[in-house]
Amino acid sequence: MPYLPNLPLEVQGKVERLAECRKQIANLESQLMQIKNERDQLEEELFGYRVDAKKEGPEVVRGQIMVATTSMNVQNLPNEMLILIFEYFLAINHRLIRRLLLVCKHWNHIVMQSPRLWGRVQLLPLDYEYRYPFESLLPYVEACLQRSQSVLLDIELDYVLLLTREEYIRNKVLATICEISNDEPNVIDQVYNLNCDFASPEYDAYFDQTMKELSILIGPMGAHMEKWRSLRLRIPWQD
Image 1 (spheres, rainbow, N blue to C red):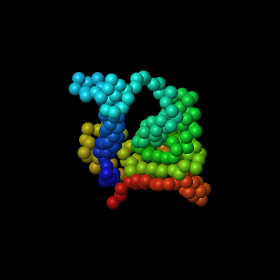
Image 2 (cartoon, rainbow, N blue to C red):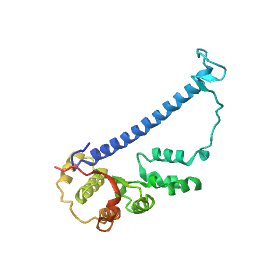
Image 3 (spheres, rainbow, N blue to C red):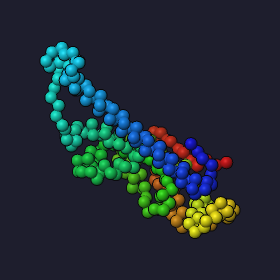
Image 4 (cartoon, one colour):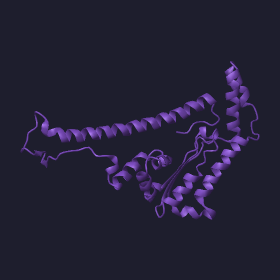
């Protein structure tokens, strides 16, 4: 849901916290669904041991032959099953694919040799990345383009929280002044009347990095766009 531009720093923080809450809720809902599925499976396996279970034979439960169940090490799962688990893990934040590469050599090999796992590019420059412009996403974009091979790409560009230079500087000024002033309402009014459209090497470095990521994703003369299967674009709302 878009919000008004030029929000006070405190309100902007609440907007970002709301987005984080929604992500956490989505994660919890996914975990809850997984636990429910596990519960249903356990109930199915234990049905024959219930007091009220009507058995059709000593080895039959709901028309199925009972088999002994043993625990299985995740490393012994078939590669295809591991890939499905990885896709589930990457559903919300595809950039976490780099974590899978660091778990073990076996997982690294599976991920690196599975083009479909690289069939997404997700660029979501949040506010914290302004403070860490050295965290480039260029290697991530380049890896997705290369490792996806013939698999078409689903592109997600979410720039809702992308600020203009003036908005960024104004927020920084407001945050600094509010730390040393108790007259917050009056300070906010004065800051919003300031002309904050001046040079900011910190902002410029981040914005240039964002443009480089898009340039790599698009390719020379749009060469990489033929690999795009879909595009989801969100931009800041303006009056």
